[in-house]
Length: 475
Image: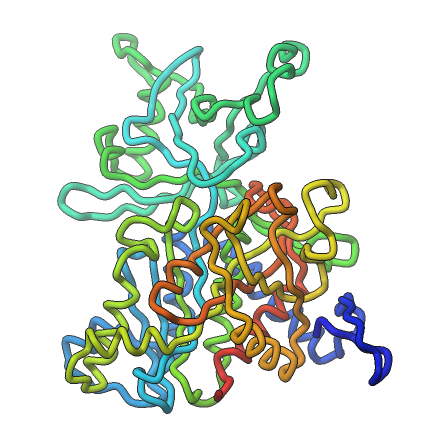
């Protein structure tokens, strides 16, 4: 809990590091969940893989595909477990509660896309005795962080007939990795004079795919052709198949425990798969049917504005709520869905920036998230005058305080950087359009949006614990 009063008359407020006071049983549970999360994060390198890994978890827990239930016309009842997918990227899972859906849902929603490099549709070329793949960066990145480190290739080729071919190169220890070169210091004097954000341009982020030639003297661009031969041998694709592919460049390697005390987790894609996993795990661990239907939402495209069919700007969520209401016998599911959404409450499960003592300048420390102080509640996002913010109502914040304090959840309030120094956005504002109460809540991170981010196990565990308490609260 964020408040620690020394006496009953102490009116002051102080934040505490909760890690040291964690009971042995909870510490063991924290380590168990952290181990499971590390495994999930290592397998969920893209939004498609995060979707597929989550479906495995849901299916193992008895969740049924909603689209199949719609075809069968089965009626929904309290305790039923349902999920629905959108394009293999976005996912919604619901545990039907005792109260009718029109009473509202309790929603925990996060995103599974993460900053990365996307392969262009016509990417492969040969230059300087190398074969390279042209990329376009996705989301907010510091471009210089993506050079001179091992990279992996994940994604899909889709043939004109609909056959989908999954690609995974670089994360198995026997695989080769990909690589983006950088200038050596001896020749980089002019590069070093540029501003940090201009040292590497977007068009410089081309991935080295090979340097060996194919056989045959008459063929031009032999190095490029050798890469095509390898892709054809492994996946049965040709150069034209890049036209209908979604291929992502991500850091190669598995997430790891960090710190000599093993208190941190370093990995790619904490933003926002750490909150997504905490939400799904909290949903799966609900012991009995809750009063209100509990919903975990995994969405795509948050890092680029939540647009497209799989982003939260689409109608996937409200259409799915209407389908659920139809299976509960609602006479006017579309109208009932609007009523249900306006009565819902949501934790927009997204990360915040943890105070970094190496770079204190942009933070206002007393309103910054601190490592090992628990899950982070962010009343408002936006930037410079709260522009574009979802600014949660005080009444809802009081409810979250009641729920978290009652469940002994360590939590802290924070914003993203000093006034005029930072800011950001989440899906909170999009969901608040329905009239539901929404506030951001998630894990504080070090090095957010870097190829490797760091999170504290304690903060992850308290985020899970907070989500679970939110799902099961009866008020």
